[in-house]
Image (tube, rainbow, N blue to C red; front, top):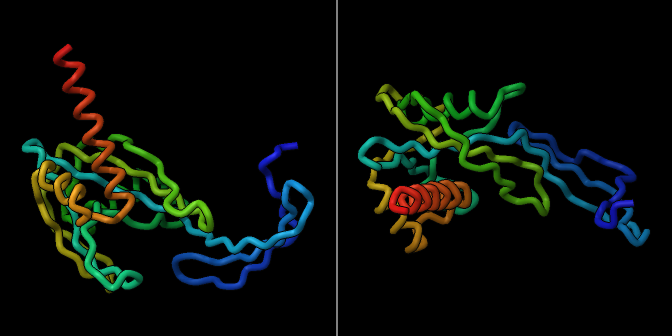
Length: 186
């Protein structure tokens, strides 16, 4: 028996919306006691850190109602039914920035809120960028900022980018660049 596993006794869906659904599960803990878990079921998504040859990154500014503020984020979006993360990344990059990319490289898979939500975000690095026209979804209002990677990292250090997926994408890229530079100088 797995010491950390909880056995699900009963699952009730208490809300089903356009983006996610909420379940309440009755579970049996490892020591046999009963407990309840509230779980948000989300289809997952993809995020894209687009970077050009001049080491400028493309971030979007978008109002986020839960925080009542405009956030600076990597382009990202929800997976459509049966859509693969890479296809979602290509679609969202074009919709939100107007860019297409010749190359997509896996950066990370993250669980944004594992204590209560099963959402998985797959983050890609997009290079070989070509301009086009953005086509945000209906009701989606955003702007795209092109800035030097160093400036984005400074904003990160100043706490101006609180979005987790964006922080992870920028820090993962920075670590890779430092590792690559160190390898080239050794």
